[in-house]
Amino acid sequence: MQKLGDFKLPQFFNYPPFFTLQPVKETRDNQVKLWKELILSYCRSQRIFVIGLEEDLPLFSNPVIERSLSHEAREVFLSAMVNEGRAEWMDKGHKKCLLLWLRIQEWADYILYFVKENGFADSVMTIEEIRSGIETRGTELARIDRGLLVRALKLLEQKGKVAIFKGTSTDDDGVKFSA
Image 1 (spheres, helix red, strand yellow):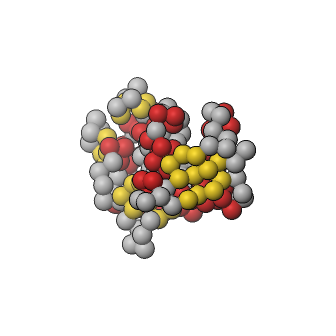
Image 2 (cartoon, helix red, strand yellow; image 1 turned 90 degrees about the horizontal axis):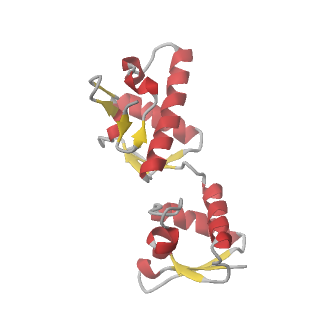
């Protein structure tokens, strides 16, 4: 089985037509489904939160079979993810995409789970500690996109589960978790 770093690629990754947009609707629908799953799975394993359409993500090419995704194919697959709520365009020109292997509500739920499981109820952490602190290493929160984290925290704030407060710099912005 072929790997991309430590990520195991599925068998169909070595199938040349997988890298060309298929003209038959049923075949294309299946192709789009497979690519959406592969992109989310790969990016989750590699902690990639943002994909640029112009970037050469290793996943978008297979040197073994000498195939790469076209710009159009990338846009089709990412747009399908956006339509499903698994990604969001970050700009009007649709050049960068924020990936949501967990939706905002799911991130908020995960944060609450993390807080309860690790005894952080009624404690304060900075947003940077949540993203890159010792406590979050090896968890879904490790290296989370800052904007995504803030959105999940704001959702929790609206529900009265956390209080967000501004620090002297963005690195010092904090969160108090409620019990």
